Length: 111
Image 1 (cartoon, helix red, strand yellow):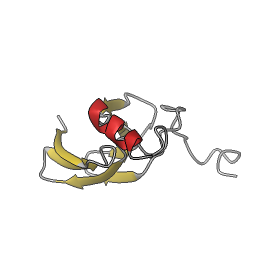
Image 2 (cartoon, helix red, strand yellow):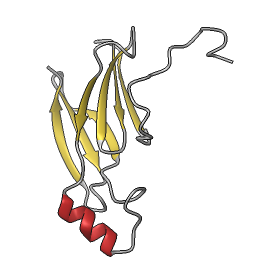
Image 3 (cartoon, helix red, strand yellow):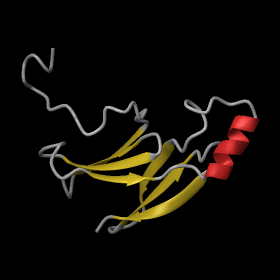
């Protein structure tokens, strides 16, 4: 209904089935951060499809192999699913992902 009424703008940046999991709205700067499977997207709130920035952050190959050896599904479980996007200060966001069952965290500079 929203699409038919032209009252929304869909995000067209990824049709890869990236399993979007977490969002962080930065109203002050007009941005939206989206955590997904192996990716973090930074979108413009005025036009979600304009100047999309993307960080590719997969789990390490050795962690993926350990995950598969543990009997997990390589496509649906052995990836770095971004679960935490938290403002840290005015210039950085704290980010954590599953890391194929070996969690990892870091900071993103929002320059």
